[in-house]
Image 1 (spheres, rainbow, N blue to C red):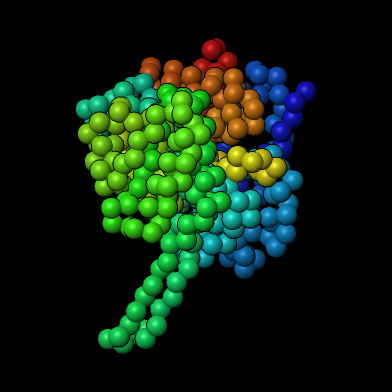
Image 2: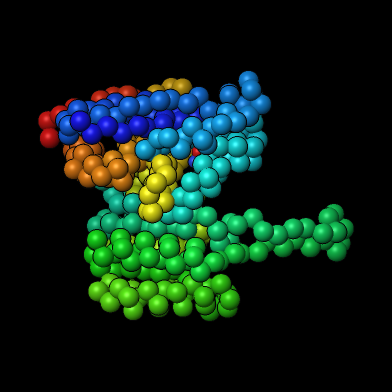
Amino acid sequence: MRQYRIALIPGDGIGTEVVDAAWQVLAAAAARHGFALAAEAFPWSCAHYLAHGRMMDADGLERLSAFDAILLGAVGWPATVPDSVSLHGLLLPIRKAFDLYVNARPHRLLPGVRGPLRAEDFDLLVIRENTEGEYSGAGGRVHVGTPHEVAVETSIFTRRGVERVLRHGFEQARRRSGRLASVTKSNAQKHTMVFWDEVTEQLAAEYADVQCTRYHVDAIAARLITHPASLDVVVASNLFGDILTDIGAAIQGGLGFAASANVNPGGGVPGMFEPVHGSAPDIAGRGLANPLATIWAGALMLEHLGEAAAGAAIIAAMEAVTGAGRVATPDMGGRASTAEVAAAVAAALADG
Ligand code: NAI
Ligand code: MG
């Protein structure tokens, strides 16, 4: 039987609740589709930091490298550990160590879910560069605290980094509608974004079957609100993608639905799959969290592992549950608990 080793990092707050919920659904999918998932859970979190002085064990990355994939809940508990410590101690090292340069996020409305827009028929895949660009961390400050203070933050775009993420965009466009939107700002950023456009053009020649359109980031931000159905695959740099995917999450009904895959399409390393939301201290420990974002992330994980049919079955089961509208967490307008929504999805999976 095909078997996959999955590292579970529930993390903090609702992270533990949504990972428990998603695991129930993943186990049901595995049983139905004839493969096995072997899980090992790691307690790395802010509680772990308070007990041991580090977010993850010293050999944590090495241990994770033995897994086929990582499913992460959420990391952060600002009341006891500063976010800069928790983020830099766990989430960012994993993305960096495994060079997970693609951050892919699907944005569409599940049946029965009301978003804030009138347009409801959009189906987007936003691909965000995840390792360099505006978030490369290069820069510094001088004359701190004086009237002459200077702060510099340098964007770093390498040919390797730009080409590989754009290529992934073209590949995904080819698999989907054949349409790709490349996000730029070359009218104002005359070095990095002109370079981005040049590499886009070079790849467009290679992918003649893909219809590639360039949009300035401000224009596509507006288009996501006014004409989201006119877009399909969107590829963007780290900062631009970060902002556009928050719009994506908002128009798909909120953080309870937004899922994300951090992958290195070259393979050989575990991908990390997670909901976009954080640990939600305001609702943690009460069974109020919507587990669908994490269940969706689990479906992305199975797809990435080569179990596309099982991933699609999970999505169909989620759609059956949201479409019926009977079992819903409070953010969806219902009264069901996290575990009840997960159980309903698992049951729909068994029926499907
Ligand atoms: P958050 O995403 O945890 O919560 C924002 C709001 O959305 C809250 O009102 C929360 O109740 C609601 N919400 C989030 N997920 C939900 C769900 N599944 N179902 C229903 N409602 C949901 O963001 P916040 O409050 O800014 O951050 C809390 C902590 O999480 C911080 O420590 C932050 O650094 C961390 N964080 C971690 C992330 C990660 O692990 N990838 C991502 C974002 C934040
Ligand atoms: Mg963001």
